[in-house]
Structures are given as C-alpha cells and as structure tokens.
Image (tube, rainbow, N blue to C red; front, side, top):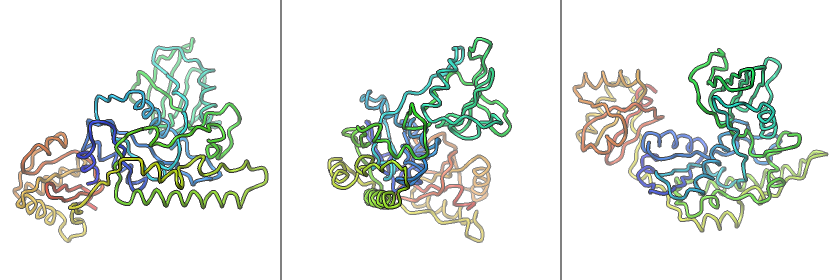
Length: 391
C-alpha cells in the first residue's frame, strides 16, 4: 500500500524514500517493480552487523551497497534523468556516512583477461579466495583455476564462470548453479563490483570497515550525496533515525568499555555516523514529506476463514459493488485457483500486464502476475494477494 502511494507521490526527478526499517525498505523496492515499473529504483541497505562490531558486514551486503553507491554517483553526475528515480533506504542506512568506492572490474566476452589484475582487484576489494575444494558458494568468493575462473559477484544471486583459451581470452561467460555446477544463461559482460566499501592495499582484518573514517576522513551523508532531493518518509521513520543514533552511541561506549588489548581505538560516532545536532540539522534542511497511509486498510485474512475461497469471492463482489477497482495478484498457480473461484462466483476478471492498465480502468476486476506479502483496501482499489487467501 505504501508503495502505491509512493509511486503516485514521486515526482519526475529523484525521490529519496525513508522506510521504517530494513525489511520495509526491501518490501517497498519489490512492490515498486509493480507500481512504478518505469522508474529507476535503487535500494541502499544498511550494514548487516551491529555498530562498532568486531566483524565486518557480509560481502553480500557490501556488494549491494557498493552497487547502489555507484549508481548514486551516476545520479550526481547526470542530474537530468530520462526517467523517475526512487532511492529507498532505512533509518540505519540514512544515518551512516558514505565514502568513495572503487570502480568495478570489467569482464567482457572476447576480451583478454588480465589474471594478475583480477587477482589484485579481488584481494584489494574484499573477495575471498575459495577453499581447497575450489567452490564459490557465497557472494564475494573467487577461485582462479587453470583456464576457468569462478567468481560470485558480491551483489549477485548466482556465481559466474569465466572460460579462457590458451591466451587467456574469454571464450565463455555464464551464470551457473553453485550446487549442481551447471551453467545457465550466457553473459556478454560482467562488471564485478567490490566486495567491500573499503579497498585496502594491506592485510584485511575482521571489522576493519568500522574504521572507514581512518582511511577516508571525508565521508558524506546520503542527503549530501543527493543535494536538493525530495525526501519522503514513512510514518515513524524519522523517530527510528533518532533511535538508531542512540544505539550507535551505546555501541560506541560498550566498545570503549570492553576494549581488548591491541585493538585500534574506535572512531568517534560523528566520524562514521550522522548523530546529534548534525543529524537534526541535516533532516531540518531537507524538504521532508511524510507519506500518508490514511484510508488504507488491510484486506481480511481469508485463509483463517472456514471457507477461504467463499470469503474471498464475497469480498471481491462487495468491493466491486462499492465501486472499487479490484486487483487479484499472485504467482501462476496461485492465480489459477483464485480465478476459478471467481468464475464459479460469476465474477468477470480481465488479465492485465501492468499496474498502469489497472489505474487507467474505471471499474472492474483485474488479475496481475505479482507477488505481494499482503493486500490492501483504500477508497479506489481493493488488492487481494495470494497470501491473503492461502496464508
């Protein structure tokens, strides 16, 4: 529901949406793929570790962040966007300052692969050499075999296999399954993102990213990286920023109190995070619009009823009778069962290929191939997700 309101509220330029938490941010980005498919959407996640932790964020998390930061740098360089841009983040990510990230390592079919340069990039940018079995199982793993290089890009969901000829020219570049080792779709090009926000020419130790300001003293907040951006905040998100800042202060005090001999001194919170007066000044200078969800209600949990499908079709009939446009959303098998139930209830449903067709319709029921965690009801629409019916 919030994503539908955000899609309607976002202007032609760049909009920064502050979700209430990490989970909500990911849900919003997923839903924007339906409600605003033409927009360029970027998710900037927070680190998946505690402030001042003794472990580093995971390579998967840092890979996603690096990829997002590279795109945001492109936004700053190209202020005249050809399509809407929506950046989604969480309170924890908003209050963390950002540094410079290394460029990606380009790999293209037909090019000669400089194995030494790739190995140097991998070591500098946080990639982990595979164990003795040579398998790359997790984002940020790399294995340089004879004429084959396997790498799991830090921002990807599957690893990539690079096949070389005798002169190290790339003859094949394919995604593969890390379990079965079977290759899948071919790629023409891979831009391998760093697996850490901190590129190092020295030995990397656990938790070193928490000392980022010692290597890059000129860190900047996200709001500075996107000057003049329209900031739309979900209800409760600004208070969550203040709570996040309090947790950062407590974590810093705990790290100092329980310091281990030989530890490097923890950086001051203000060096790595937007805290205290600086945070309030930055938020006060931004043009903040709170996203209203007034008038939005959850649809009933049909799955809890004795006859889930009868309750579902009765709800749809009632919503149509009240003049609302109804959307039934789910995956292939899920939609089929719901459509059969609607047909038995003599409710006509049309198939559409996107949200815009639903928005343009004046009435009626539509079925949409989309996966939502839950539906919603407002003055104009009733969206029923498969999860509402099946649980």
